[in-house]
Length: 577
Figure (cartoon, rainbow, N blue to C red):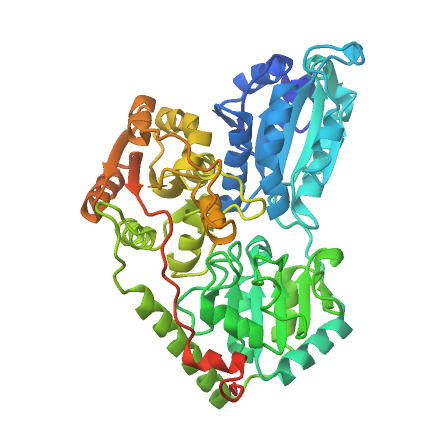
C-alpha cells in the first residue's frame, strides 16, 4: 500500500485506515472478528499513525469511544465485525445516540457473494443500526471508500451529533484499488458548521427575557458540544439570569459563578433549583432534551411558563413545551446573539436575586453536612465523593454509572471552572458504562488520573475491562458503591411496590479480588481514611486501583424546603426577583 497527496494504491482496508488518518483520527477501540482480518492487517502497518485499543466486549468498545469523544470533544471511533460483534455493539451505541455523542462505527461484513446463503454471521446491518445511528451506509466498491468516509464525517460533525455507521464487506476490504489524489474532504473537527437563528426570533426572545421577573436558563450538553460556555456565562451575567443545568450539562458554568444554581431535575437535582425553575416566568432551554427527568416531571419549568428553546435541530427546540419559541442554530452563536440583544439587568434586582439563591444554597449545603447514622463500616456516597475530589483535585474528570453514583455526582461533585469533566450516561442510563467509558476518558486525557464511580451491579456487567486497564496501566481510580443489590430498582420497589422486593438481590462478588486477578490493585475500604490512602497512593504512582466501599441501600435524607420557596405553596406572597 502507498498513500500520498498524489495517489493511493492498496487494498480497501488500507484505504479505510488512510482516510481515518487524514481525518485526524489517531485512536480507535474495537474487537476483531473473522470478517475484519484484512482491516486488522491494515492497522498493523499503520501503528505509528493510529492506535488500536483492544476491548474485551463490543458494547464496552462503544462505551470507550463514547467516553473518549465526550472528554476530548472530538469524534470517537469503534470497530467491530459481523454477527455477534454487530449485535453486541448496538447496546453501546444506544447511549451515544440518545446523548448526542459523535461516534463513528466501522464494521466488516460477510463477502458479497455469500449474501442470502445463510452464511455464518449474516445479518442486515443497516436495519440493525437504524435505531442507534443518524446515518448508515454499506460500501459496495473500494473506489467509493473516500466519498463514503467523507459523508460519514460530515454527518458526524454537522447538525446534532450522533453515531454513524459504515459497513464494509470483507471482499471490499480485500479489493485492490488504485486512485488518483484523495480529494474528498476528511474533517473530524467539531462542530464544522455553526448555523445562526433568525434575527426576528432572536429579537423576540431578547424582549421576553428582558421583560421577565423570574427568568432562568436550563442548560444541557449542547452547550458543551458547541463550546458555548463563555457566551452562556456572558448572557447570564449581563441579563442577571440564574443558570441551572441538566446532569449532562453539569459543568457548562462553574459552580463558583454567582449565577450558577446547580443541577435540576429528579435524579440528583437540588430542591431549591427545582423550586426556582418551577416559579420561573420565562425559561431559556439551551441544548437539552428537557425531558421528564431534567424538568422534574415538567414542573420546572412549568408548562405554563414562557419557554424559549435553543437547539441545532428544529424538531428538538423546546419540543416538550407546546408553543415554545424555537431558536434554531448553534448554541454558541445563538447565546452570543442573545447577549448582545438582552438589556442589562438592574444591579439592585440582580443583587436581591443572588442573595436569595445564595441563602437557599447555603441552607441546602448545611443540611447535607449534617451527620447521617449508618450501619457499622458503611460509608455515605456523598462523603466518599467529596473525599475523592479533595484528594485527586477539583479538575479531575469523573465518569459515573447509573444508580447510586449518578444523583450523588449531580448533587455533590463541584465543578470549579467551566468544562466537560463530568460524564454520566443519562441518554439511556446503561449499567456497566463507567468502567469502559473511563478507559476512553483516560486515553483522551493521557497523563491525568481519572475517577470512575460504579456500583456492584454495574461492576458485574463490565469487570472484564479491568484487564484492559491493567494492560495499558491506565491511572484510573475506581470506587465501587456496594449495597449487594440492584439498589436503584430495589428503592423503587420500596417506594412504590410496598417493599415487595423481587429480582433485585443477586449474590455477592468480591470486586477487589477480581481486580487483583485482572492485574490491578484491589482494596476493600470500610473507613474514609482507608479510601483516602488508597486514592492518594494511586495518584502518586499514576497507577490504577479498584476500591470497594460498602454503602447503605437507602438513606432518608430529605432536605427541608427553603423558607423562600414556600411561596410556591401559597404560604407567603410570591417572591420578587
